[in-house]
Image (cartoon, rainbow, N blue to C red):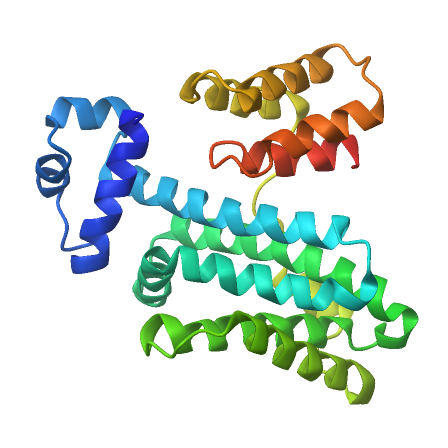
Length: 277
């Protein structure tokens, strides 16, 4: 296992038991069976490790949502697939989701808050795209309220099985939330969130990622990966960024090859946006 990933996995076990603040670098290195020097070769500090874990978790969710919204062909199944993927992801990463919900409520770390706001904006953008596709102009005046209702469903229902151990029936939960969302879309008539208010809330946090920055991220992924079809696909996609020449169908196939690899999800998300696929 790659040392950086090993540290993240082992640190997560301790954070789940003790929380961020109560866990020291010394405890993490002992739990990993490595020296402090080895830790600092991978992370400059515990804070950097925490931010890396947040990035890893949120990149998985953001990428999955974006893929479903843009690649589910049947509109009748889109909302169901959306909710199913969201809660399945929370379930698979329930330890970290629990830590993040707790720490976010207590944290005054500005960089952590900015990270959360950044990914929240990306998820919101995907939700708005889904609403426009499903309901068109019929929800134009309430789309932001509806977006926040969906985010509320995501947060509230995830608390049930993350904190209260409610048995998770993904199929039933997804069907139930599809029904609720459709009712809101059909019957909501009094909007609260205006364009002006959304502009105040959604101030830019980070600049748009450039092609050069995507290449840097891809290089990091390639360095972390063992020889595989995913790695070869990523190398070819990097080449396409530098010197375009592949047909869209081939690019799409290469993106399919990498989209489920844990090291490639964010690259897949960025590349889909760059190539508009």
